[in-house]
Image (tube, rainbow, N blue to C red; front, side, top):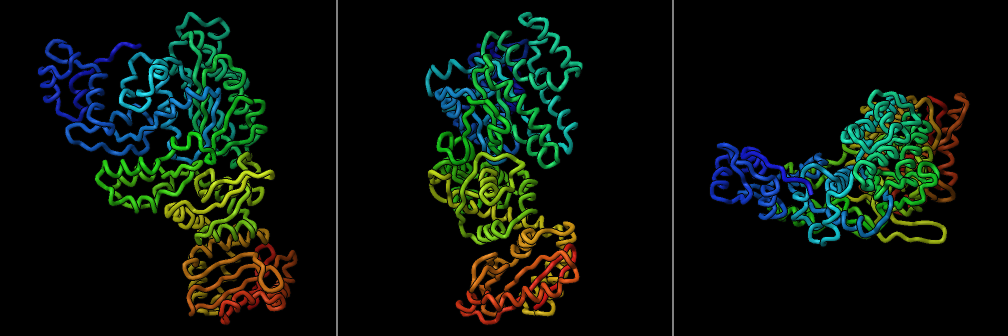
Length: 616
């Protein structure tokens, strides 16, 4: 075990939240049994200081002070020193018990993955100081000697790719090189080690001088593992956080092949057939199929939001939120917290969004959509930009609070993110934008689940974050004018506004397919769902209509829109009339009439490139 670290009374006072004078008095009174006099000053072991904190309670209260929530702090030691900490240390116990060589945890952004990895690092890593003090009042410390003897027993490689977000492969590769070099430099004991051979020392020198080529960098995790094992005479733990961030960037910015080739070789080198490896843990949002990234890596176990195992370690459980609310004296806010931030299901475990709950308490219990701007929405926007009528219809149903049935595909690659409704809704599930409402059904032909919005916060994410993105591509006045015209049953203004709306919509994307047109109408629908039930591409009468708006209020008209796409701009008017005639010929108004709605506005809409014609 490492030697004790001694700190000054000033440092101890800051940790304890007391005055320096009070800490000096405690030393004089013998409250710190290992305090030593250094001239006229007292010095106290850091372990004794934290033992005193932890003897008060798990929240770390000292002198009646309430600890704040840690917002954005992903350092385990910093959090347990200064902030309220929700104890997730039994994750360490389960990792030790399971003896799985490599684990990948896929969870939404901001659900505690980075803090969990830093907790694992802080527990296992050999350091010059005694880090057991940060775990002695945690659940892991009560599990027995089997687990305590592994504390501080391993060299640890810990890297994160969360900031590897650049618009081209060259910049991304440079960022990855810096990430790798920084981790080598963190293990500066290797640069003076007498255990390494000449080739290994040469690798270190070339790395310092930035003289390694791309192939040599792909061996970085493997080489660093071997060097650390030689120096410390111990196998190595490898932790990789947000492994899929550069992969997602590669897909979005058109350098996917380059980044996937590099990451495949880097991760396989460090995690496959690495005799120096004691344990590997990765985190990310998306699984990314073994065939695409983890080819041949047959020792990896993937844990997703559908799995019951480890389900309580990412996000807050209901009991944890209740204890947190009690600690802050806000038990009366539990219903509001649940309405806004509860609703996720990992396995069979009910889960709250940890980022939003912590920020809620930090901001004096103001209920807001705190998670909205923290998650990467670029892939979501890509999905929306290529909507089909079927997907658009399902999204409308979800926004109106109706669950949808989906066949889940949890083994997807980014280039195929838009391959149909199953893949898209699977991605929305793992990214935190949807939840499962019941137990997932495993059948001979696939995995099936009912999906819905988790909570009020995510509803706001769609309406003010994602859907508003579509409106940002249009003239806001056009959308507003169209909505007003529909509410006021002004057919002439509807025709004028709708023409402007469509022209603006199409011109934003240089002429889109008919399915995309349906998708862009979601930008309109989102603002009208309080007054209309919206159905798209549904059967009615003798066919499948384009778009129908069924009024919730009696003073509003029903609205039916049928679309045609043509190549020849000269045939637009004829196509629009044909679309209008089809509404009557196919009795598309039958559903509305069956519901007692006889005031129905009908629109035949045809478009070609950036041109639009409307018949009413």
